[in-house]
Amino acid sequence: MDSLCCFSSVSQVVGGRSSCNSGKGKSSQSSVKYGYSLVKGKANHPMEDYHVAKFLQFKGRELGLFAIYDGHLGDSVPAYLQKHLFSNILKEEDFWNDPFMSISNAYEATDQAILTHSPDLGRGGSTAVTAILINNQKLWVANVGDSRAVVSRGGEAAQMTTDHEPNTERGSIETRGGFVSNMPGDVARVNGQLAVSRAFGDKNLKTHLRSDPDIQCADITPDVELLILASDGLWKVMANQEAVDIARRIKNPQKAAKQLATEALNRDSKDDISCIVVRFKG
Image (cartoon, rainbow, N blue to C red; front, side, top):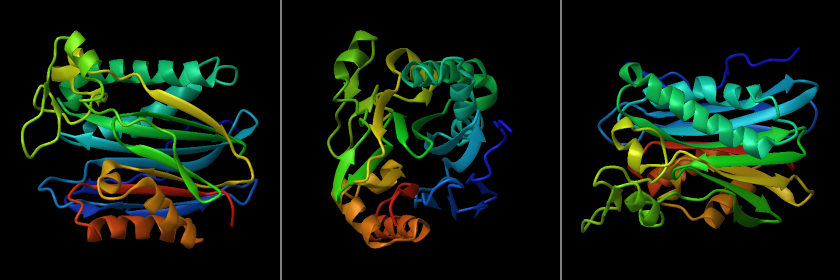
């Protein structure tokens, strides 16, 4: 039966306690397995990350759906994305013929819906990195912001996403009437506030921000070993190749995701750390 039901692998913090910070699953059609680990950072606010990690049957195909949503100024927007973004992508009529345009359209439509509901969702926003695995053969990855997707091909790390940083997209921000601040001791920020140049939500900054995703596609060839999705809490303290080297040494993807989060904490990452590892080869 086709399904767009709620995704069972969700992580959030309620009343200061993590309801689910680690888990695993696998494909029903192949040996592909996944594991995830989410750890609250040291900042003085509740956990703001949500994730999706699930395989489901949809229109005669198996889909692996994986995502990290890294919120800022609250968790309302990432919670909304967890519930709606994949559903919106798969509702696109031309998804099977043109996944690229369907993903792009759904990202934009979801952002508009968030802005429309801003009185309920607040003034915060979220970055996103999403991956759709079709029949364990084709991988579509999209992102806005600085959460990242990295694949390992024969042990070599390859980044499938683009970090949307204010200095990199300064021209677009200034064309839209905004500015980029570069204060000593701080990262570059849009209008002195936001450290990414693309995001969902952020109504107060939206005229100066973009929400269109960068989208990449890859075939799952025999040399593709694993996929890592993670929030910037990991990537701020760890290079792509370092993450791949750690994950490759641990065959269990749940343990690999936990080890990556632990290593980020050991390196004094202050941000929330969310990580999904998808292993294609045993």
